[in-house]
Length: 240
Image (tube, rainbow, N blue to C red):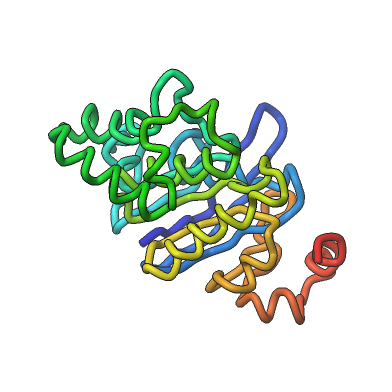
Protein backbone atom coordinates (compact mmCIF):
# COMPACT_ATOMS: atom_id res chain seq x y z
CA UNK A 1 0.00 0.00 0.00
CA UNK A 2 2.79 2.42 0.92
CA UNK A 3 6.45 2.49 -0.05
CA UNK A 4 8.96 5.09 1.10
CA UNK A 5 12.33 5.31 -0.63
CA UNK A 6 15.32 7.32 0.64
CA UNK A 7 13.13 10.00 2.28
CA UNK A 8 15.09 13.05 3.40
CA UNK A 9 13.87 16.09 5.26
CA UNK A 10 15.65 19.03 6.87
CA UNK A 11 14.60 22.00 8.96
CA UNK A 12 17.19 24.61 8.08
CA UNK A 13 20.60 23.07 8.75
CA UNK A 14 19.12 20.27 10.88
CA UNK A 15 18.65 17.04 8.92
CA UNK A 16 15.71 15.26 10.52
CA UNK A 17 15.17 12.35 8.10
CA UNK A 18 18.33 10.87 6.58
CA UNK A 19 17.18 8.41 3.93
CA UNK A 20 14.21 6.53 5.41
CA UNK A 21 13.14 3.35 3.59
CA UNK A 22 9.90 1.69 4.62
CA UNK A 23 7.13 -0.39 3.07
CA UNK A 24 3.69 -1.07 4.51
CA UNK A 25 1.39 -3.81 3.26
CA UNK A 26 -2.40 -3.58 3.24
CA UNK A 27 -3.82 -4.55 6.63
CA UNK A 28 -0.51 -4.18 8.50
CA UNK A 29 -0.14 -2.36 11.79
CA UNK A 30 3.29 -0.73 12.01
CA UNK A 31 4.40 0.78 15.33
CA UNK A 32 7.21 3.32 15.22
CA UNK A 33 9.21 3.87 18.39
CA UNK A 34 12.25 5.97 19.23
CA UNK A 35 13.47 8.94 21.28
CA UNK A 36 11.99 12.43 21.00
CA UNK A 37 13.46 14.38 18.13
CA UNK A 38 14.36 11.24 16.20
CA UNK A 39 12.11 12.03 13.22
CA UNK A 40 9.04 9.88 13.95
CA UNK A 41 6.39 12.62 13.78
CA UNK A 42 8.11 14.29 10.82
CA UNK A 43 7.93 11.01 8.93
CA UNK A 44 4.16 10.79 9.48
CA UNK A 45 3.69 14.40 8.42
CA UNK A 46 5.67 13.73 5.23
CA UNK A 47 3.51 10.69 4.45
CA UNK A 48 0.41 12.88 4.70
CA UNK A 49 2.23 15.73 2.88
CA UNK A 50 1.82 18.15 5.76
CA UNK A 51 5.58 18.60 5.47
CA UNK A 52 7.51 19.02 2.23
CA UNK A 53 10.54 16.75 1.92
CA UNK A 54 13.68 17.48 -0.09
CA UNK A 55 14.49 14.09 -1.55
CA UNK A 56 13.17 10.57 -1.91
CA UNK A 57 9.88 9.06 -3.01
CA UNK A 58 6.54 8.25 -1.40
CA UNK A 59 4.53 5.71 -3.39
CA UNK A 60 0.93 5.33 -2.21
CA UNK A 61 -1.48 2.82 -3.79
CA UNK A 62 0.98 2.38 -6.63
CA UNK A 63 1.23 6.09 -7.44
CA UNK A 64 4.33 8.23 -6.88
CA UNK A 65 3.09 11.26 -4.94
CA UNK A 66 4.45 14.43 -6.48
CA UNK A 67 3.50 17.63 -4.66
CA UNK A 68 3.43 19.52 -7.97
CA UNK A 69 1.49 17.00 -10.08
CA UNK A 70 -0.69 15.14 -7.57
CA UNK A 71 -4.02 16.23 -6.10
CA UNK A 72 -2.88 16.20 -2.47
CA UNK A 73 -6.38 16.88 -1.10
CA UNK A 74 -7.61 13.74 -2.85
CA UNK A 75 -4.70 11.73 -1.39
CA UNK A 76 -5.42 13.09 2.10
CA UNK A 77 -9.01 11.82 1.93
CA UNK A 78 -7.52 8.31 1.79
CA UNK A 79 -5.04 8.88 4.64
CA UNK A 80 -6.57 9.62 8.04
CA UNK A 81 -4.41 11.29 10.69
CA UNK A 82 -4.91 11.50 14.44
CA UNK A 83 -2.75 14.01 16.28
CA UNK A 84 -1.44 14.21 19.82
CA UNK A 85 -3.66 17.16 20.76
CA UNK A 86 -6.99 16.14 19.14
CA UNK A 87 -7.35 19.27 16.90
CA UNK A 88 -11.15 19.35 17.25
CA UNK A 89 -12.95 22.57 16.34
CA UNK A 90 -13.98 23.95 19.76
CA UNK A 91 -16.94 25.99 18.41
CA UNK A 92 -18.52 22.94 16.77
CA UNK A 93 -20.44 20.06 18.35
CA UNK A 94 -19.14 16.51 18.07
CA UNK A 95 -21.58 15.88 15.21
CA UNK A 96 -20.46 19.04 13.38
CA UNK A 97 -16.79 18.08 13.83
CA UNK A 98 -17.50 14.72 12.19
CA UNK A 99 -19.71 15.89 9.34
CA UNK A 100 -17.88 19.02 8.14
CA UNK A 101 -15.25 17.40 5.87
CA UNK A 102 -17.44 14.73 4.23
CA UNK A 103 -20.03 17.37 3.31
CA UNK A 104 -17.55 20.05 2.19
CA UNK A 105 -14.88 17.85 0.57
CA UNK A 106 -16.73 14.73 -0.56
CA UNK A 107 -20.00 16.60 -1.28
CA UNK A 108 -22.02 13.87 0.44
CA UNK A 109 -25.61 14.47 1.54
CA UNK A 110 -26.20 15.63 5.10
CA UNK A 111 -28.51 12.69 5.77
CA UNK A 112 -25.91 10.12 4.64
CA UNK A 113 -23.14 11.79 6.64
CA UNK A 114 -25.17 12.05 9.85
CA UNK A 115 -25.99 8.33 9.70
CA UNK A 116 -22.30 7.53 9.19
CA UNK A 117 -21.35 9.80 12.13
CA UNK A 118 -23.82 8.03 14.42
CA UNK A 119 -22.43 4.66 13.35
CA UNK A 120 -18.83 5.68 14.09
CA UNK A 121 -19.64 7.38 17.39
CA UNK A 122 -21.36 4.18 18.46
CA UNK A 123 -18.25 2.26 17.44
CA UNK A 124 -16.00 4.44 19.63
CA UNK A 125 -18.54 4.39 22.50
CA UNK A 126 -19.60 8.03 22.33
CA UNK A 127 -23.00 8.15 20.63
CA UNK A 128 -24.49 9.88 23.68
CA UNK A 129 -22.01 12.76 23.17
CA UNK A 130 -23.18 13.54 19.63
CA UNK A 131 -24.45 17.03 20.51
CA UNK A 132 -21.76 17.85 23.08
CA UNK A 133 -18.95 20.35 22.54
CA UNK A 134 -15.25 19.49 22.94
CA UNK A 135 -14.85 21.55 26.12
CA UNK A 136 -17.24 19.19 27.96
CA UNK A 137 -15.30 16.05 26.96
CA UNK A 138 -12.40 14.34 28.72
CA UNK A 139 -9.10 13.98 26.88
CA UNK A 140 -9.83 10.34 26.11
CA UNK A 141 -13.26 11.22 24.73
CA UNK A 142 -11.79 13.99 22.57
CA UNK A 143 -9.27 11.57 21.11
CA UNK A 144 -11.96 8.99 20.38
CA UNK A 145 -13.98 11.70 18.61
CA UNK A 146 -10.83 12.63 16.65
CA UNK A 147 -10.45 8.99 15.54
CA UNK A 148 -14.10 8.84 14.49
CA UNK A 149 -13.67 12.11 12.58
CA UNK A 150 -10.69 10.69 10.66
CA UNK A 151 -12.70 7.54 9.84
CA UNK A 152 -15.55 9.63 8.41
CA UNK A 153 -13.53 10.11 5.21
CA UNK A 154 -13.23 6.30 4.84
CA UNK A 155 -9.41 6.29 4.66
CA UNK A 156 -7.47 3.20 3.63
CA UNK A 157 -4.48 4.18 5.82
CA UNK A 158 -4.55 5.65 9.33
CA UNK A 159 -1.63 7.55 10.87
CA UNK A 160 -1.48 8.05 14.65
CA UNK A 161 1.02 10.54 16.05
CA UNK A 162 1.47 9.72 19.75
CA UNK A 163 -2.32 9.65 20.24
CA UNK A 164 -2.19 8.93 23.99
CA UNK A 165 0.78 11.03 25.11
CA UNK A 166 -1.35 14.05 26.09
CA UNK A 167 -3.81 11.95 28.12
CA UNK A 168 -4.02 11.26 31.83
CA UNK A 169 -2.86 7.67 32.44
CA UNK A 170 -6.34 6.40 33.35
CA UNK A 171 -7.73 7.61 30.00
CA UNK A 172 -5.11 5.93 27.81
CA UNK A 173 -6.81 2.52 27.81
CA UNK A 174 -10.08 3.70 26.25
CA UNK A 175 -8.23 5.17 23.25
CA UNK A 176 -6.00 2.12 22.82
CA UNK A 177 -9.07 -0.15 22.82
CA UNK A 178 -10.52 1.77 19.87
CA UNK A 179 -7.19 1.49 18.05
CA UNK A 180 -6.97 -2.26 18.78
CA UNK A 181 -10.48 -2.67 17.36
CA UNK A 182 -9.41 -0.81 14.21
CA UNK A 183 -6.34 -3.02 13.80
CA UNK A 184 -8.42 -6.18 14.28
CA UNK A 185 -10.86 -4.97 11.62
CA UNK A 186 -8.00 -4.89 9.07
CA UNK A 187 -7.30 -1.17 8.90
CA UNK A 188 -3.76 -0.38 7.71
CA UNK A 189 -2.14 1.68 10.49
CA UNK A 190 1.14 3.43 11.25
CA UNK A 191 1.33 4.35 14.92
CA UNK A 192 3.98 6.46 16.63
CA UNK A 193 3.73 5.59 20.32
CA UNK A 194 5.57 4.70 23.52
CA UNK A 195 2.77 2.32 24.59
CA UNK A 196 4.79 -0.86 24.38
CA UNK A 197 1.98 -3.10 25.64
CA UNK A 198 -0.10 -1.96 22.67
CA UNK A 199 2.85 -2.52 20.34
CA UNK A 200 3.40 -6.04 21.66
CA UNK A 201 -0.28 -6.95 21.29
CA UNK A 202 -1.18 -5.31 17.98
CA UNK A 203 1.91 -4.53 15.86
CA UNK A 204 2.90 -6.70 12.94
CA UNK A 205 6.25 -4.90 12.92
CA UNK A 206 8.03 -2.42 15.16
CA UNK A 207 10.33 0.16 13.56
CA UNK A 208 12.94 1.83 15.79
CA UNK A 209 13.95 5.24 14.46
CA UNK A 210 16.74 7.36 15.94
CA UNK A 211 18.50 10.45 14.56
CA UNK A 212 16.57 10.27 11.30
CA UNK A 213 17.38 6.68 10.33
CA UNK A 214 15.71 3.29 10.73
CA UNK A 215 18.03 1.59 13.22
CA UNK A 216 16.17 -1.70 13.48
CA UNK A 217 12.87 -3.30 12.56
CA UNK A 218 11.19 -6.61 13.23
CA UNK A 219 8.34 -8.38 14.96
CA UNK A 220 7.41 -7.22 18.49
CA UNK A 221 8.92 -10.41 19.89
CA UNK A 222 12.21 -9.87 18.08
CA UNK A 223 12.54 -6.17 18.91
CA UNK A 224 11.47 -6.42 22.57
CA UNK A 225 13.03 -9.73 23.50
CA UNK A 226 16.13 -9.84 21.35
CA UNK A 227 17.07 -6.42 19.90
CA UNK A 228 20.18 -6.63 17.74
CA UNK A 229 21.37 -3.03 17.90
CA UNK A 230 22.97 -1.47 20.97
CA UNK A 231 20.97 1.76 20.52
CA UNK A 232 17.69 -0.22 20.48
CA UNK A 233 18.69 -2.03 23.67
CA UNK A 234 19.49 1.29 25.40
CA UNK A 235 16.17 2.81 24.39
CA UNK A 236 14.10 -0.19 25.47
CA UNK A 237 15.88 -0.33 28.83
CA UNK A 238 14.45 3.12 29.60
CA UNK A 239 10.83 2.45 28.58
CA UNK A 240 10.14 -1.21 29.33
